[in-house]
Structures are given as C-alpha cells and as structure tokens.
Image (cartoon, rainbow, N blue to C red; front, side, top):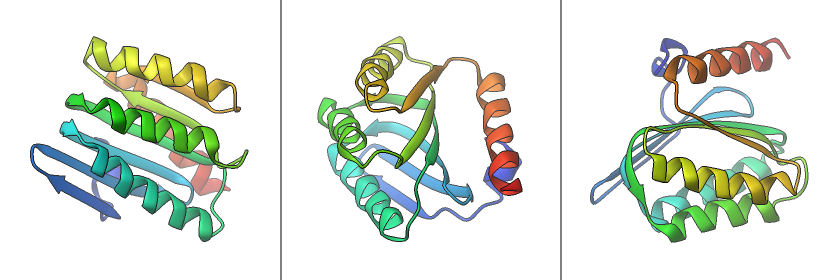
Length: 147
C-alpha cells in the first residue's frame, strides 16, 4: 500500500476467523480497504454499517479503492450484500470503485458487480496491476485533498 494510506490510522478493523478487513480514509469521501484471507458476510455487514454512518454524516460521492490482492476468497453472500447495498443506496452516494485483485475468480466477481452497478451510475473497475491501482489512488487523494 502507498505511504499516504499506510500512515493513516485505520477507521475500521474487522478480524474474524481467517479474515482481516481494514478501512482507511486518506481524504474525505475516499475510502481504502485492505482485505486478507476470506471476506465473510459479517465483514460486509460491518462495512455497510460503517458506510451508513458516513451517509448520516452527509458524505456522498464516495470513492473506494479496495486492495484485495491478498484476498483468497469471499463468501458469495458478502459480495451480494455489498453490491445490493450500493445498488440500493441513493444516487450520488458512490462515485466509483477500484478493486485490486490477483485472483481471476475475484476479477470475475468484480466484473459481475460492475454490470449491476453501472446501471445505477457507479463505475467499478478491476485492476490486476498494483502500480496502475496505486497511481489511480494517488490521483484520487490529490483530487479529494485539493477540493
């Protein structure tokens, strides 16, 4: 992960069984998640509860950068919950989502979610190159910090 994120204090940490899920906020409305192991449905519920709190704070036009390079698998119900939440959230809640994956299976899951989310105006992109993902993240941090 890039130093601009590593120096941040995590705002959410979920460690369950063989799963670790950490969320950082390097700029207002910009969220970076780092997942290792296996994402569980309960992890998705925790993240959604956090996002609901952000919405209550008035945050909109959220951007997400998911560093899921070390993610082995996820429960199908976790992906479905996250996709459904974003699909059902009011327009303007989420601007875009970038997902760094190594696994072809996870890339296929991202592609399936992207089809659904595109219909509600959310751009989702899978990255398989860490350098490109980190460049996009640095650009997003600069853009958000300048606003």
